[in-house]
Image (cartoon, rainbow, N blue to C red; front, side, top):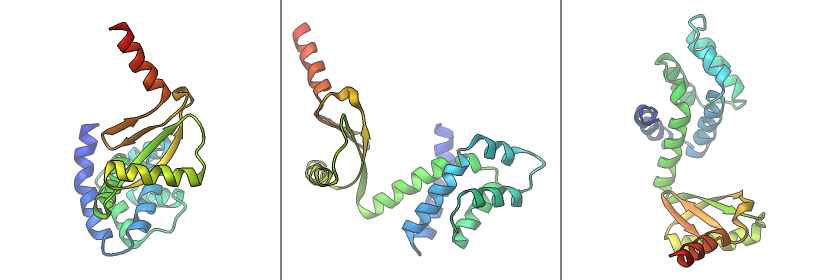
Length: 177
């Protein structure tokens, strides 16, 4: 895993530098779509096949992404395929997304909740979390019924756990000590 991260970093940084000159959000959507395609095992097997030409692989991946690609993204895909780095595309997309967030001062937050959160409630939660973490957050919600109640929030390497499950665990530790 560390090897893919090391390989992906210079590609992501170069991609970000070029994308900043245009519509970064559009580039991000296209890279994410290509990343989803590159995660498919059959696509990777086809790309690794000695019978498949680089152009055939590029055509397959760009068609499967189902998005019109910017010329720069298309050139980037060609460079990846030519260098045998298609397997690194998901890691590149992840690092590209992190660079975009860092440049705009936004951090990704995953909110784990035992119940669905209504949009109005989510806006209030995100607002209070932004004050707590001291930065703008791009939040996504994942259901985790075993939390019983409350929420657990993960922002980068920071965790805020106000769930009932965590409180019960803390009580268990305190009572058994």
